Image 1 (spheres, helix red, strand yellow):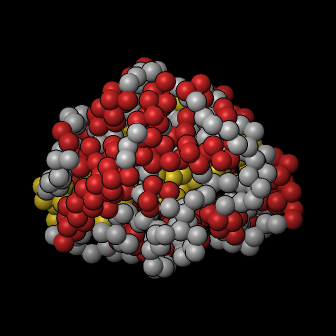
Image 2 (cartoon, rainbow, N blue to C red; image 1 turned 135 degrees about the horizontal axis):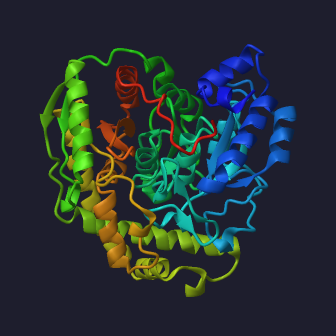
Length: 473
């Protein structure tokens, strides 16, 4: 299969070719490796490949699932592939090789995908762009001087450039939706507990969720069908969902859409991001939906509660890392800002964490009550277009770090707090040719509604024909 042919198919399409015996999994894998060679020198999106293991898997273990033979990449953060390092962009992790697959990876394998490598992440996912001491900076395929987003930036860049049609990502505050917006991908964050969380079942108390970034809506829906379901190893489980693939192409009906361009906690919204929402409202109204202005009123202390909660979680994560590394971690193990965050987290009391969690329940209540009035909620995904690399300072204080968060990605985290599904949809490009994603959210467990709406939008304003300058073909 030529790269130009390979690039024209989504994962569902490639799997159909395999099922018809028009192409073999090995031929698809060869094309994917050729794609890595073609673009990765410019993107730095794929940080590890394991060709020999992938060929062994094709020969001995390939499952007859819905995505049989489709090349696939894992984000190098939480999803453990037995015998391969999960490095997280962090030098101390480089030599740690999990003995077995995590539950999510087992489910990916059952779907039939051929996992052959890892994508780049910020160091320990603690940065607002994808860069690390271990692997350097990941570039955006639409403009290599700009960020690919965080923290699934390597996945987004690889998918947008056509290396693979979809790949793994996860999202604790926007890390599927943010890079999807920056790179022009489709990225849905599922409901809390919909997919098994790897490797720990209660990561960030269920705020962190696992799924994929893709170019088509149907791939995202099909993979969610393949991976969703109860997992005994975690606190938070969503009830089994509908057949999400069957939702694609169904009429969503006449929806009431709440619309806001006002960023939570006061950050300014760039005119391009406002424009993207306005363009989307016109599209929605043309499709028969009702759009009304609606700003979610959040508790004033909601952001400080989120900060407290996340600092405590980061410190907890590092305490658990000490068990894996079998030694104490020190300031020498981290960039200075990350150590400041970890140190601050270690000084937060259990009572402080519980108070913060209580305040986050108030945030969740405010967000979820929105869906008593509206079927879906529309906002920008990001407060700014994809930023130049130099906009992200190489070192900063913890306070400046969080202030930058609010200026860059303030719209996404509230749906991690309340557990709703939310998606970034690539409907608009600005005058510079950069993708500007828009975010839709729905009530918890309402992924089916989002897939119906997303597929309607995909048909009304297709994005598959848009190819970035850095592409495999």
